[in-house]
Length: 201
Image (cartoon, rainbow, N blue to C red; front, side):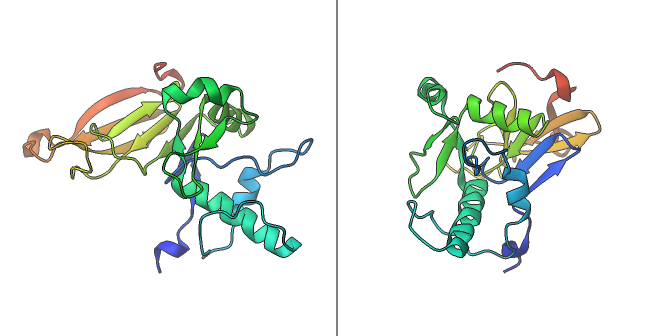
């Protein structure tokens, strides 16, 4: 029950969008301003989240409820697109596509990331949801950071590390830990740069 009442997303230092899954598709109609952050702030808490309905015909109240559900569902379960998907995503309207995970989830590509960050004057998207062997993974021109905070296997092998991120004013420190490391080695900085100077990956 406690998790049902936690925020679905947060903006850190006015520059980092923090979320479990990813960014949602735009909710505005053609000609309207992008209102995703404003709509995210209006999501009821707690909310009963379920796979989105395929554009059902419903009342205005039901439509608003489904809008919030779609937003919440993507915030929890969306993923960055694989590099092999990027060419096809560039031809889409917003840079989103159906996720191979199924269940109504989506993937977001470079086009979607750049549009979201530019619209809200943000620099990074920090997320979890996907296991990564190094504990921290970087993609989408180093604008999306995936942090996996357990070193348990999850399909990444016995040498998988857990990761965490320390945001210190204008620096981002990515820290990972191997369960086999000694006490003196238990924290390792694998990235330390000005937030405006992350390498292009």
